[in-house]
Length: 91
Image 1 (cartoon, rainbow, N blue to C red):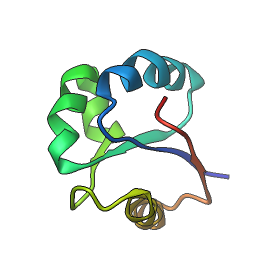
Image 2: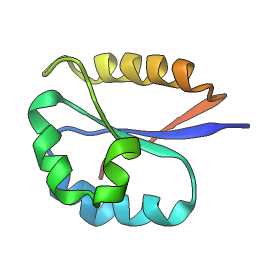
Image 3: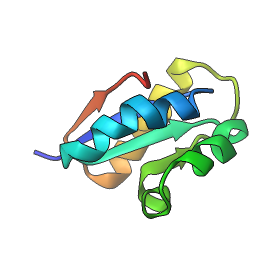
């Protein structure tokens, strides 16, 4: 079973890196952080270079809320052939 750990995050780049990323990087699981366009630079600055292309997904729009982010996650997963989504908090 292919599972994706999906982490919608907004405005918590440093906390995400300190707490969430430090755990995710040790799981050996497939994970992606979903961020708004206005926050992308902040997450880009804290994630290691080798993680940026596959671990950071930019949503199409800003300030649309969690429901919007969850819909984008669902669409992302459909395209990647995952069987399940584990949504994780960013802190």
